Length: 434
Image (cartoon, rainbow, N blue to C red):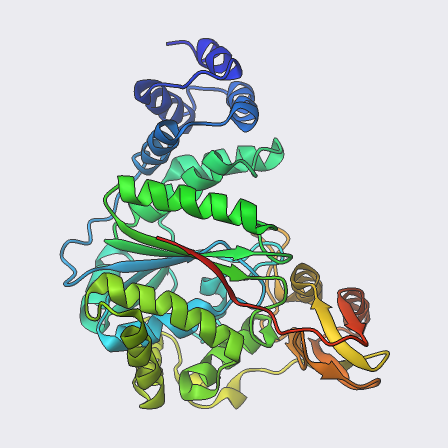
């Protein structure tokens, strides 16, 4: 079959067959189809879309382009959690140990941060010596032994996605629902777990800015998961403001440690408990979500969740003494308040700008080669709906460079809205797709 004919077919809005989709994915992965033809096909898909069968075939072809992990030797229902990204998102650091302490196997593959969203592996590397690149054998053994392991994606896990995403990124075809679904779900299905819980973030700091687009993506991913015979659910969570109070690697890790000790921000814990109760239900340890949440709250209250976190860090080579004594984390040189310019109520803390401000301090990457400054970031002192007085700190900038701090302060001010009118705190759980 000729790639020219397949481009023409999709250009005319016709559905590609399963055989044609596999031919395209395999041909491009193995450098048999040139970038210029693949770019043309991506743009045709962007404008004409794919039906649900094509979408499934694309996902499975991308999954089958590399290794597929066999986790059958792990006891119990293996569960992965995936977030579509956000600002201040340290959910995995809190959720994973809680779930594992209850006896549910958490087999998590995570990425690194790029742009205004942070990466779980980067945050875990705040613990000196932490190994975020486990072999398949180490990964399986660790989940069997302590019920949790978090590792970076294998280089040969869905390699088609890595190559296709790089092309989508430079051809303005990233934001197409079938292509997004294929990208996320091919990696999740290749990771070999029995169940997947998706945190689909919505709002200013998320990839999907509206509830409508997020709901469409959630339904698409859940449909693919079910077609692949996985237990799967998606929770739409609010990302109009940063999650929790901390933005930045060390700062978020400290917040996660405090959360595991029972002192977590209300919004963070609401997301953790909603996602976690779904994971426990999938595991069949408990089939009632309210009872599942009670199990999680108990694991935090009795200290088992924090003990599991220490065990997890140590098992992957990290220095867990930092979790026992958070003063060991290196602080930033400067801590500067961002003061409110009038009395009133906080109406907006635009998450994306807060993420970009943290990145500008050195807390994130513009390219994968950039080195992260682990100590910098932002600590919020107020959340949307809170009352504030003129001169009171809305946030604190943690910086190692005064010029960068000044720039970040201006960004934060531009992202903050204060009004004399009262407003409600943000609703965290927007919708659930099962």
